[in-house]
Length: 287
Image 1 (cartoon, rainbow, N blue to C red):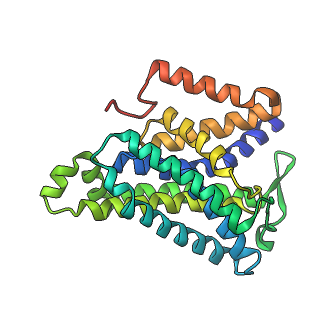
Image 2 (cartoon, rainbow, N blue to C red):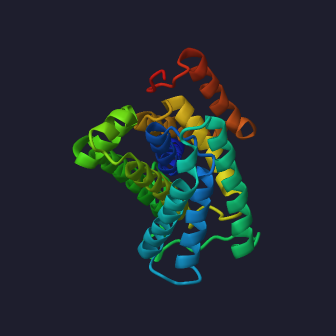
Image 3 (tube, rainbow, N blue to C red):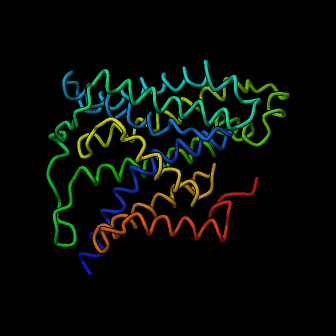
């Protein structure tokens, strides 16, 4: 029984990485209506930048993470302001093609700047070590990631439910034309939201650097799981993204333990079952 509970805890720590990337993806889709294929690439950029700041540049870990998040947020601003903004009025297929193009550009860019070798910096000294949980050593860094994920979840709830900016964003997501008529600067809201989503992806990538390999193409693997999560939880729904992350993370952990060959099989089965019963996702609404 202890081994079963311990594996569940491992799944929760994995779920927090997935939550950070899927939260940004679902916020961007919920407000802008953009299904951003390049969201995983922003996760990858955050990982590479955090590695560079913390490893070769030898900056403190917290400073490295925040610097990586800030740089990727600016990259997100450039993507939205100079490229995506011009495609809101045309068919969604053009947005998908553009963001897929960004995936190819970013993959080649990291190969040029960092090469194709796997990279992984050391775990910060103050987060190294393990606690005994259910009779087994549980890494302190995993507990730290769980705490960060829950803190981000609470902060997002407060931001969107209890602040004026959050109400403005929700109003814009509900009816952008009406919001514009009431004086909301919709293009500015869109830019801020896209930057915010990019920053969340970078945070997930930056926090993963000490325990996950940084390599070209890691964004592709992450975006597949993020899409599965948003489909299960409901596109554009933050609560659905959180619950979906827990489902995928915990199922992956148990799948690795009991059925390592069919780990992904169970996740796709869950997604297919949700699509059959509720095509809009567990917490989504029909559009």
